[in-house]
Image 1 (cartoon, one colour):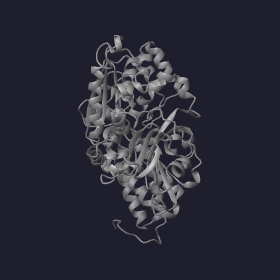
Image 2: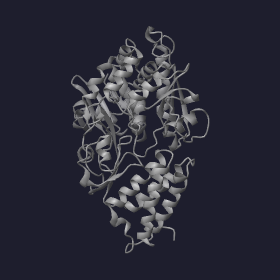
Image 3: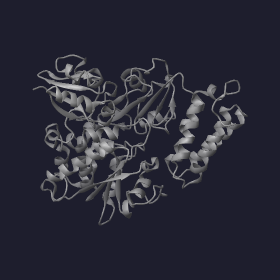
Image 4: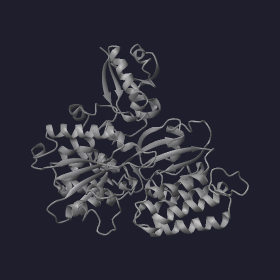
Length: 506
């Protein structure tokens, strides 16, 4: 009987993967479910096991499902050899799409738990040193060195410490956290156990938004399995170390992606930014020292411990070491996951892996780093994707989101959207963010309507400076970045004197 793999990833399911799986079962195939390979443009992507490797068929429909068993359909050849995957350097996503997410033996056969097993033979301080040597920086957006954070928590005096995983992936155009947890949840568990061992914590919390029901289910099942097999709970692998992991589901507020707001929500309060100091590493969850890391940061840790920090540090550019999971979205021909060493250029991602726009029109702008990231024009596509490299062109890496727009985009309206987004999502604690975003949206409405454009753009600039310098967290502090980048690179879109005005309040 032929064995086929059909993704159970939410993106694949949304375009009919479950129906395709049912059709393949009816046709007599043995169906196994995996995560998505990240080739979202090819979903549902069915892989047929052969002696020569797993042969992929793109965009399979229920009606055409039986045909792939006879070699009919849009054949991509051996999936591992496809140019989309073969050129990547997958670390955090190494097993995503390859294994059954709930198969703990399959996970271990593909190198799983090797990092944890090695970590447990080392002292906590040596584990921290290994992560420090890797150069790993927070993949949630801040880019703070993970080893420095862990060392601070390890050195803090407290009876109880915590590890908190930020899985409140709220940036538009990003989906890497969701996909890695749906496709390989044991990697996150392994990373959290290593982190807990390194900093002296016995409890870990995963804070996940309610909009990710597939990921929540996959993670909870994997946690139960990990307890059963001795990778969680008391005396992990005979080490005497004890770790429990809890899943907490948030309501989906964007601000809860900010670490102190997430901690407030975990403690049962409204998600609202805390003033710093104290930093969470010294006074975090329930007032105790807490290592807060993003999903992708923790998912890089098992490889670092398995292969050594130096192997990870050998990848990358400048002070940006290791790999980054880029997420191609928006008006792009081939959207999906691309994991590569830091330093790849934006042009290689958009024109190479992405294949340009889905509409076939010229690319006009790319927003890098989520809704608070800068818009980058094509004449800057030679920029290398690294923290400092992007900062040099007044942009940021963020969570690795890359959203593409063609030449029909109105950049004045995109700038207005940034203010509108902040006005809706602000927690309201600080005045620059709460009031600045509302006034910014109103002022750009005047610009778009062609009213006193020069004076109102000066006012927008003043508002941006106030928000950047006076906001309590990155929410208000970064909202000006997309606004100012749009004004800087596409000034003609803000000169509305001779343009037709539609849909703007008078």
